[in-house]
Length: 173
Image (tube, rainbow, N blue to C red; front, side):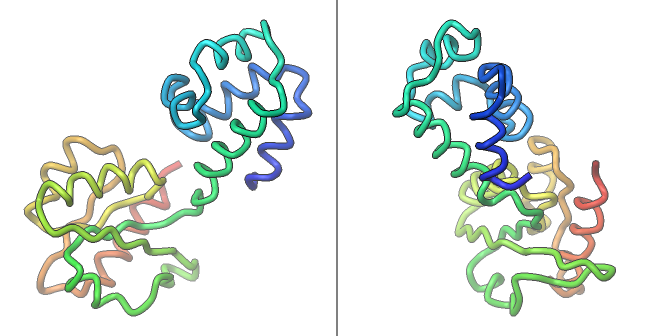
């Protein structure tokens, strides 16, 4: 479901609160507190909307719609590549063919181990289906993330690692 259809379904829903909660938790994979913060709406207002105690005014509805749009606009399937800028410069395409399917690739540059971990967490939050990274990083990421992690093996091409990640990540339900 595209962003506009998602927002429309919320607005026309007979139970706004239930639909909002479903979108926030299942589609955006956020908790209510995070959503309220991102939407810049008091948590108490969100909870009143969820319980049906209150209907949204136009300003609140606009903030909710903008937040949903912001977090669903990048909901296409993609593989994240976490590496230094010099390694990322090897990428010549941001869509690769894997078994006849076009798979998007997004770069997450990092210049230190800490930046790489932060980038990986961000990539998972952005919806990455798998992550390609350096061997030194993969054991840590496997412990803290739930998406498949594929290590860039120096003897292999970066593109081969992305294809492996795509096969692992896109086969998950």
